[in-house]
Amino acid sequence: MAIDRATIEQIDATLLPQLDRHHLRVLSHCLDSFQAMAGHEATGAIPDEDQQRLWCRQQPLVADDPAFLETLLEQLRAAANQLDQLAIELGKPPLALTLDDLINAAEARCRG
Image (tube, rainbow, N blue to C red; front, side, top):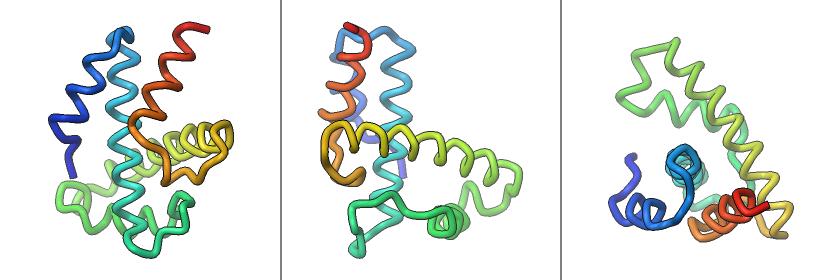
């Protein structure tokens, strides 16, 4: 699952510094991945580590590389923590976050 062109363009259209835009692209991709992991059974919560591991093992680029799988899961944990925190601040479930939510939060951090 790759980040789509429209998402990249929306992020790149912000006035955020390059590193912040890169972080937004990664965080957006993680959010999309969590939403795909949850599928139709989504409760709004980030899938647990077992669900994440199972989903990652089904991804062709990850399945045959155990070291990369562990690194990816570590990065997903970090993204999940950030998304959970933002969701708490906004009073909504993490999987209900939108790209606009992520951009607004990043812009607020840069201003503050």
